[in-house]
Length: 120
Image (cartoon, rainbow, N blue to C red; front, side, top):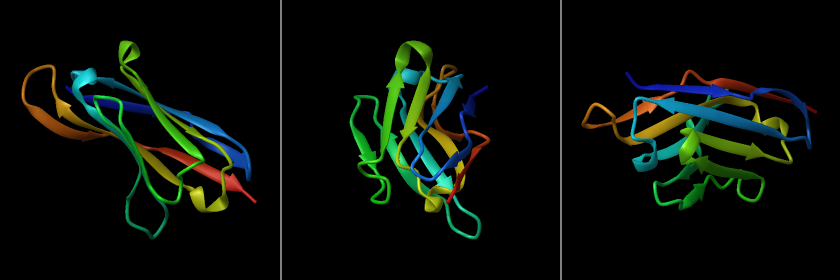
């Protein structure tokens, strides 16, 4: 069974920082691309950042220069460091995995989401 468990969301003032974490189980973590997506009320889910199995990173235009994605393969964990937060960053943030599973095969999976709220 694949599980992605996010943590680290909360309420922060504009200009502040938060670090999200996502712990994965049931997948061959080092072989998976890991990503963070977000969904604001009334909007579609959008890409925030992705880190490939090889460590290459990609960011959505709205977060470039402010957010940093990283991974620790020894801990099966992906992080999202969010700095200079803005009210427009308010959303539920979801962790995503894409790649091989421990029990064989490949798949894409989502966490349950963690709320990020930024006060102006």
